[in-house]
Length: 372
Image 1 (cartoon, rainbow, N blue to C red):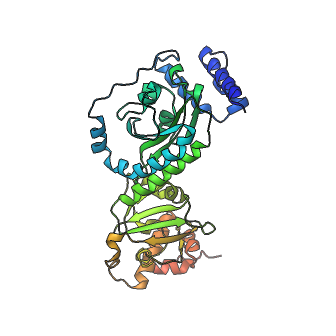
Image 2: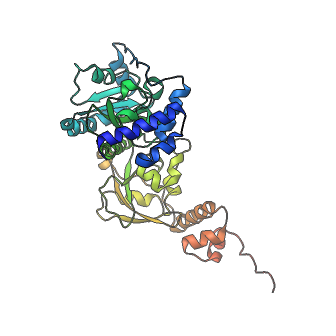
Image 3: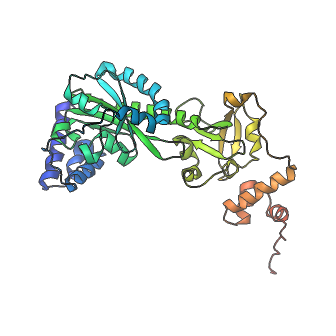
């Protein structure tokens, strides 16, 4: 689709929504049917009393805004800056630059070829300026934070006429506990449409998330992937453990592979609740080249590689107090029964044991069969 035709589709949808003659979703179907979330953002802007022709008054920011951002978001800035610079360098030839915001949409860092003589660039590329939906209407920044997924917006897809000069891609950044901590944005001014930047910015956001996860003090980092997938891609799961096997951080891929991790921000979680093997075994894998074929309580399996951080590499691997193998096996059986909601037969199937063995190891009498 040519850019002029794209602009016609956008104008059609905008007119339909603002004139209330036809639903915006219907107007989107022909050219960009998967973008109805933009119409929802436009509606929120209208509900806030905004009109597209209003002038956008970008906030004045105090002189101490950069220092405040550094103090308030030091961990995120430290993790993000190397990737922010790499990303900005990659998109500079097509006249885009990079912006990093906090979880509220306030700019905390920028990078790239920003033309400070162009007021349209300088207005949005200032540390401390509020670029949330509430402040500047529909944009990649507000939409990525609202949708919690990567987005792409081109020119007139922004709500205000004043912001229709921008084209932008954005992706949320999730912290080690799974909560959104900020977003990464690529913006160009009166540039050609580059929807592929949505994938590029999402990739960079995932790399920043990995750095954030590894920045949490830990004794063991676990890389995870499915048995038929190779390690080394952005799809690798990442989980970090402390010396007692408690999970201290994870990345988005790990939380998708192991949904129990999605509660990490609210509830402490131990490695033994994820993996159907004695958790000290994970520490035994540190530095080994061959992945460990790891059973999950769900009955699925993952491949796992373990690495100790440099600070811990000279220390002996933490181990649980020595216990008999039988005690470890009994712990696994108890865990399986809990996972199955008390259904012993289901737990036995998951473990590959007979029901009688499970009852015996739980010190329960095997139920007698009713008389025929």
